[in-house]
Amino acid sequence: MIKDGKVFTPTPDNCLPGITRGLVLEIARENGIKAEERNLSVTEFYNADEVFTTGTMGELVKVTEIDCRQVFNRFGDSVFARLQEYFKKQTDIFGEIIK
Image (cartoon, rainbow, N blue to C red):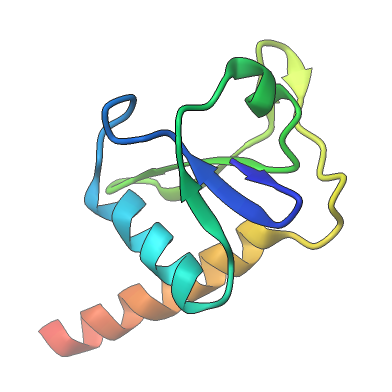
């Protein structure tokens, strides 16, 4: 989730540690986006500016609703869009290396 321009993710004992998740945290930090791993409450997700999931098949997927509550970006700048852009650039580089 993203709140006030900062990325928050549950600690790996509360979610799968995942390669994509790890890469997103690395990309965030390399690009000056603060990122923190800690236990998060459902209320924090309800009040987030942006929420997204990570995974091998979906990569980064925006969450627009949680428990019938809309997720609204009150921060303005879309940190999620920036992360998607950085992620795409990074994975495009990996694709070129493999070729």
